[in-house]
Image (cartoon, rainbow, N blue to C red; front, side, top):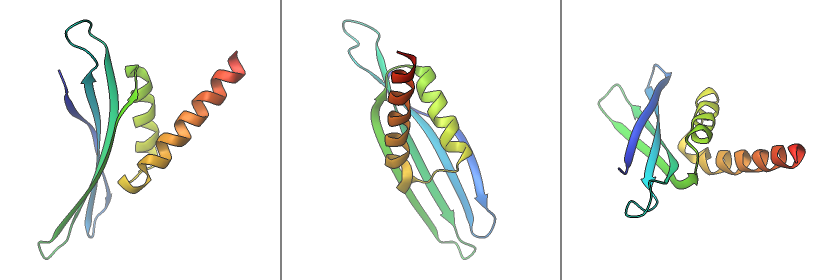
Amino acid sequence: MDGEVLYERIQTEERPLIFLDYYIITENISADYCDLKCYGIKIQKTVIYEGGGKIVESKQINNVFYRYNDVLEFVKKIIVRSTEPARLRDAVENYIAESIDRAKESA
């Protein structure tokens, strides 16, 4: 089953209203032969102005993680930092670099 699941929504400002929605994207690698899944991240920023205007910005990166625990750890980190869509790529790159460093230290 492929799809996106809203993991958490946070409100960062009251005027204008700014919401950050964090999604976990699940994709089947090969449903015919196995049940392997890969995971991606989507961040959607919604700004709602008092006069009725609304701006929606989003960024999605697919197939970054192959373990659900890794995507959970990552999404929790970016929520704490209130990461916005424009910073998603940098956050993923930093997380991967940190993971490689941790793996080298434990080897």
